[in-house]
Image (cartoon, rainbow, N blue to C red; front, side, top):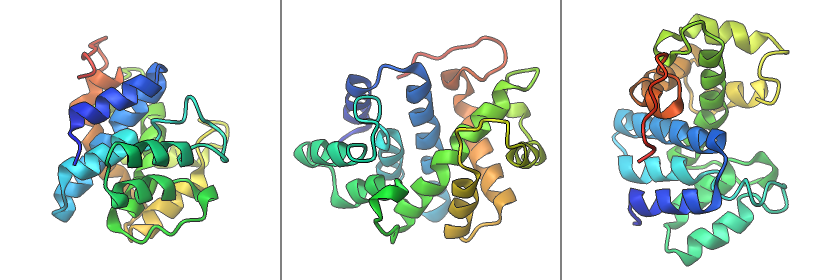
Length: 194
């Protein structure tokens, strides 16, 4: 298995956008939290989250995103289950999410972005101040973070067999320790993305 350092180098080689990098770090943190909770391989799950969109900036279309990335990951020796989970997180690929890792990646992808959006509009801009009820309320506001699919958020929790509230709480808790890296620590604190 490739190391996190190798995965981070790959992510940073293909992704320049600070918002996409932050999204990758957030999904990685959520995946690691669930791996610990489920007794799975935290490093493998974290790397899967870190790399799930690594090709998106260069290859954003449904005919390329995850497909080009899968070829690159195969060439670099990433395990088949990591590649499959990454490809299955994009509904348009029509691949089954038949592993816990694949279902979790799908569930964490949109929700991580949404939780970050909720933190950004809080007066404190601190992810630690985000409450489950605030996230649920914002999910009902169609004008808020319009680019994030509410259907995918709900479907993700459903595929994991988790109540939405529990899923939101897990993701929020996973992001709090990396708030500085996400630019959401509330005090202007920024971590160096290493």
